[in-house]
Image (cartoon, helix red, strand yellow):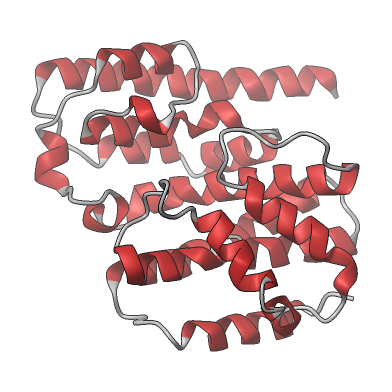
Length: 264
């Protein structure tokens, strides 16, 4: 049985060990609850039963638990050879059985573990069973859905390490990043060379949604336009590219939603 109210209490207790006033910490707390809401939204859109809805919410609550230790030790959101926040989160929850603070029932452990481990990877690992795969897809979509809210509302200094509004507004978009975006391709970490490449890569999350419900939410909130409009692009080439990116992103979402309607 899943007691989400008790899990929230345990989560608040876990956070007491961190500086909750620090900007990056505040961002991740808001993001965590945003992902919980997005997970519930997607699960309900999929017409899942109450057990799976509550499980999706719990995974949303725990998916980024490794971020807080990552911020404390490295002051960044960049995963690398030294640290992967999904792997770290899994260790925090399961190495010393801390997971029992959040849920007493062991039957969901594999689903929770697999979902967390796969939420930040380029693609989902093979050989998951149907339930593991379902929840891995939900958390990946929910995480991306709330990331659009983050990029549309949070401080630039907390979103991109070592960057601010002025740096972004004067920066350029690499040709490879632009071309990949215009070909509806996700943007891998290794290809990003500029701060604007990072900015564009966040919008490119739209190309990696499993379910259209997240894209529906992004359209409802007008997040593509809100993100693009946050900056006054000083570079002429960047300004031209970002307008093409805006148009392509909005059209891509429209097409995905229309194609889904045809299948119904």
